[in-house]
Image (cartoon, rainbow, N blue to C red; front, side, top):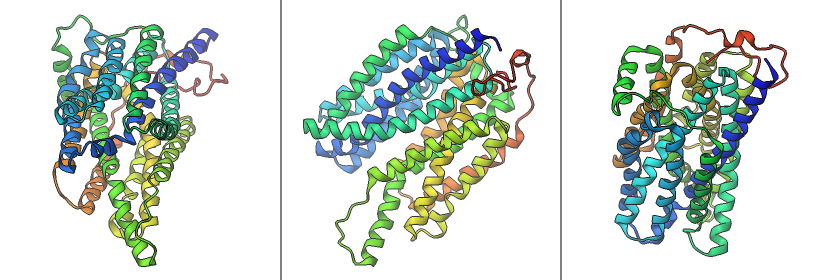
Length: 424
């Protein structure tokens, strides 16, 4: 590989990760205090649930459409809009009015769809334009996952500092709004624009996405695996707190300890994020030795087993917690692995659209979990079933025609992952 190609890789990596770090920081800053803020406004638990339903429902319906416009109108433009839309959502948190907060959740749902699709779609297109490989794309996505875990831990600290300093639960949202403003400015100046099929009619990407899903088995498999895994992940995100709180209270009562001891949510969350970061580090090592499909199958089998303690021995808090930590470790492997697979199999002309189609079942699952009243055991059983179904799908991928891009690469290059032989 020539020196110019190596420079292009590192330049793209720096520009993407710098912006991505701000993107996830703004998102994580809002997570730790949003429920407490709603409660401080006197909003009932039922209405709080409706606010969350509004967010996921907005992501399902409006977010799918808005984020998909990136293929036609430009991924960079949509990423700039992300900062504006999410920033406005943060500002609505200053109002205790339920309808204004509903509007904020609607905007947040749209922004979340953009965050989960358009930024990655921009990166993959840039890798394609520069002739970079799947391994190089995987290296950038793995770095993004590591950065995400580190920032998640730090964001909780920053959010708490902002609340302690100002005495206001809305302070983390103000910090996030400032970061989102900076993010949009940096995307405008640091990123170049790229598109899907720019000359297609406005509705063409949606029709092309459906046609591709029906015609291309590999794309359909990618979508099914992502939907089932992330559906399980979001069920877990919503329910790990009550699952461990119930077990913690039972343990405290059996031990005869005071009942006012609180579950250390911050420490547990930090443990989860450390596991995600470690999983991403493992992916960086495995991707140099194993195919993406084999890595994916292994992590899906292990992920399935992580919910066995919650189902078989739910009274053992430590066993359940250990299973949850291992699941988060698998999440850390899954994100960069799945991103690299999307880069390989999902076509460029409707990439944003297809990535949003993949999120439709995920949002449906979360909405159902929020509105139904099933037990924790039933919900975790659904997670196990979803993941077990995922585990058999990687064997169904069909070989694709390989280009000659990587035949020109120098296998002895010292740059991490630059010598892999899997082109985009």
